[in-house]
Amino acid sequence: MNNSELIKTGKTALGIEFGSTRIKGVLIDYDGNVLATGGYEWENSLIDGIWTYDLKDVDKGLAACYSDLRKDVEAKYGVTPTTFGAIGISAMMHGYIALDADDQQLAPFQTWRNTNTTQAADALTELFDYNIPLRWSCAHLYQRILDKEAHVQNIASVFTLAAYIHYKLTGKKVIGIGDAAGIFPIDSDTLDYNEEMVQKFDALLAEEGVSLKMRDVFPAVLSAGDDAGVLSAEGAALMDETGNLQAGIPMCPPEGDAGTGMVATNSVAPRTGNLSAGTSTFAMVVLEKQLGKLHREIDMVTTPSGFPVAMSHANNGTTDLNAWVGIFGEFCKLMGIEADTGELFGKLYTHSLQGDPDCGGLLAYGYYSGENITFINEGRPLFVRMPNSKFNLANFMKVNLYTSLGAVKLGMDILLKEEGVRLDRIMGHGGLFKTPGVAQRYLAAAVNAPVTVMDTASEGGAWGIALLAAYMADGYRDGKLEEYLDGRIFARLAGSKIDPDPADVEGFETFTQHYIAGLPVETSAIDAVKW
Image (cartoon, rainbow, N blue to C red):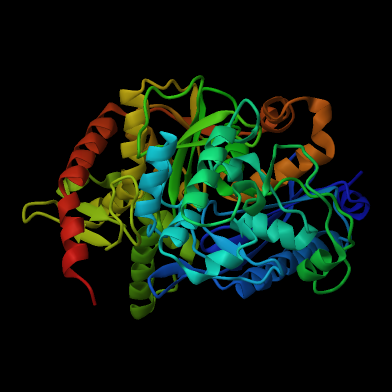
């Protein structure tokens, strides 16, 4: 079949991912080839100290993204899609969406970016002897209980964003195991929530006088390839304003952006790893065995098929870097220069290669929000330099690129240097790697290991969730998920590998020493700057 016929007959897979600043849709064939894309820009808001999105914007963004993708299909192939082999929904992990028994929202949606759960996260970590990060959904729920928020008594469901959207589209209260691993600890042997910890959590809630049961509140866990329901008539109407999309389309388990990042980089087998760089930046390594001890800086999650994964997750990634590029864009307009945004990013990123390996003594923190790896609960973006620092454009861009990897490197140092975790390969993906050979080179220096970026890297997690949908629709004949990705998808794809340059490695280590030494400046700024 040609592409038009594939689309007409529904021999395709659709993935839609809700990122921090962009909702992206990708339509693929069953071999992973991208047929069409769509997108919609959105942004979180800081309201009463809470990073949030209005759930009405979730509905609006879903419809707008699908409409943009549908128009791309129509323009390219002269066909209006009415069905797909499968659909997958992915989104930012963690957070807290609480609904009552009538599916009415009870409290503001708290995203992964919120770090107002220290008391709960510390208590659960001690109870479980297992690291519970601040942004995990169980920490959010328990913190609401500790704070005696009135809505708790009416809670019937608590969702992550992906699980919430999937529920609206299918009526099924389920979640992919990778996303579930950002809700509550997972047992990789049973491919479910850790039952011993479930019992402890229920007992803890009972001690607080709360009748909620963990498994009643949170969605049920599914693995890659499992049946996660079908698109309902209401769901089809929500997605497609034209009314052409048919109900009954199979849906794969909804996943978090960490899991889709693993899939998009073929990092689902032990001793593989990947780094996803965007508004947040996180590196994941699939483990051969559990870590030697608990590290509060490291999340333990899973692949979409249930392998244990160690994650170094930094809340802050490229937001401040993007803001600085925006300033240069404003300057271009002021000077009467028409600068294409993509070209502006490319030229500034590439120019950073002319900078000193250690950024010339410049220092920056892109902390728009709190940073769990450095145990800082609020954010103040900062740029700092010494009087004798080498302050030029190349070093300025380099330090902002370095610092977008700064916090995540601290976590990777724990894994690679303290725990001796072994990596056969690490892959980079996300918009940061769109400019060839820049962020890829800096990541190789940060982890002192070769870094590969595939030609599909900029498609990111939306392509990853589309692959999971394709795997459910047509992938089982190729075996397990890792076998399907290796043999059917990635065997024919092109990419580039960069080995670490010793001078870059030494320079990044010097920057990291400055980064650690300067953290008291960040905490002082939080104390002093309150307006």
